[in-house]
Length: 585
Image (cartoon, rainbow, N blue to C red):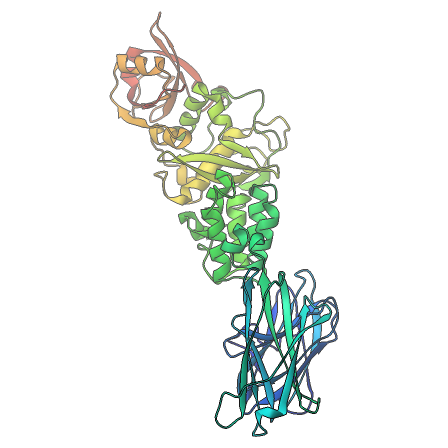
């Protein structure tokens, strides 16, 4: 494991005792440990010498004041050693060693030594970062220990940009004392017209004999205004910012992009507060970033809240928070984007071969299995009868053997992702919807079984009027066809309408989706009690109604998949009907 003796932030640095003896500290910086911080205290003005060498990749060195602002820096490229020499007032200071290339890590040797300095030259900028059109303002104060200002004759200035060559820029002479004891001299100095980059300004003082008396350095950066984009202004974490910007080069953040960005937040095994805020900022700006609606909804469930986040694969999970582990966010990604949180069942899951659709979409594809969810399958049948496109548009093939399925919560689209694994018996045949299909058959049609599985998963989100568990048993207790229809179509529905011949005929002729529910006791032998049927036909000449039984056409029982009934038979055996209230255009 890499060394990690240094602190990783300003609040927890490694404390050093700086002496005239050169001390060496060995440590490491890389992807999971981007910054190393050291602190030290000076009781008197002192000179300080810092060297970072032994590098296998690029790393930079900075000297920070007690507020954590850089006062000097060394920014050589590649594996070149970094060094800082400075004279400092008494106080608390920090040393920062940090990685430059996010893909490369390196060990390093930090060498530290210092001596008390009777004379010094201070050099500071008004701030550490400037815009490209700003003037860099410096205040330089020479301090002498009783020898008199007149001893100092000249200060030379040198400037280094982005670790390049040092360039001589100016000298300042004829100092004017500003204190009665003749120990201080101060003057203002400014720089303008500098391009964007990281700079180090070095000052060197000389006395009247031409001998050098002291040196000082300070660092600052200039940011080009024109290059600051939306990501610079809104995304705090450098890794998330870089990942999002790179993936937005095609002007869209699609499903794969968002999965990769979400995973970038777990680079240090923890999702910190800044990273969580950045992820939520991306989701909240989905229109600007052209995030597809289903991707926005699923991402929102990962980074914000959904009742279903309470559990994952039968274990407690919870919604994301600042400090969440990398395991938690990966489980949330897998739950919502990869369909790995399958509904609980006593049967084994097996990978289902076949296609989402085979030979088009029809209500006759539906065959109910071993749970009492006729209300939902009748809703699917009624929808498929009226609008094949609506069924087709429910599903998004993600291209990785998963499908994202759309439902509606009070008219607002919601989504859940399922994989191709379906519950089977010991012989390998489907147990629930499409019961009797063998999992290994290449001609399986999967849309009904996957819609049912998605509905069972969606149950855990708490709004489909079932028991709020992610389980097949959770949708096993029956329900209203009207609820299923509004969840599937997003259309308004009417519930438990009284049986009226003209009302049913008019609703059917106007294109509404209709389900009828039988009484607990029925008279006709071919009708199932306490069951739901989809209305799929009406003959105005004979006044006969055609109903579809979601058990399916070939259900292995004496109950037919399609029956024709007179209105008298409907009144005798059925208790009410549900329907959409909006026509399909």
